[in-house]
Length: 230
Image 1: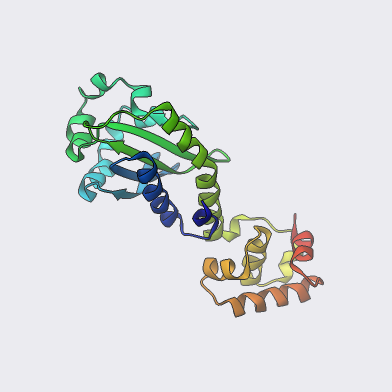
Image 2: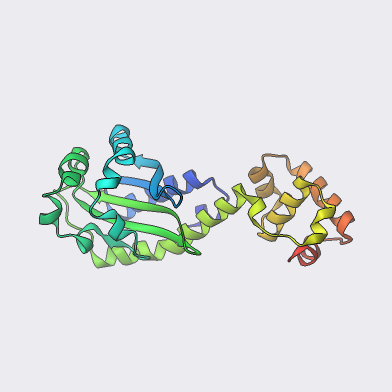
């Protein structure tokens, strides 16, 4: 899981995990979405071996006629489609016949990345009818991957929204960019990681840090974090 310890964009993380779990579980299909609390819907799909047009149909229609995913989303551990609805019942639904069956999806397991009450993203892993359903051991393996998945997604989200981290009033001495840099220092990010997150050079990162040190009256990163914590 060393790859996930490196900084990645949110979409990259879900793609990396897709490749990994398909290999580990011998799965054939993968999709991943991000829950949108405002619209109460799933968006930002990525897929492996699935028809992109079919996923667009899911976004616009089938997710609102999906008998299994809302039930599966309640779980904070790996959960199979058959854990919430028997396969014979699922096969009677429009969702199965007009959506799942179109790509050959038959046996499914989902894992959701929950962090502080927010669903950051999910993994939806499927096999076709010729394979067996996912076993309890395979579900436990997914559960073992979950902490790294959640941590990587949470880190990516914070990196893309540094303003979400609160600083104390002393930070008013800093420019907006210096504040953003300080927030990412608080996350423990290196100069290189900060540069990537803010789309600036490492030299510019160091300049922002030196300015912040001078304005706050400190000489190192640890002292800066201590001074700016609310």
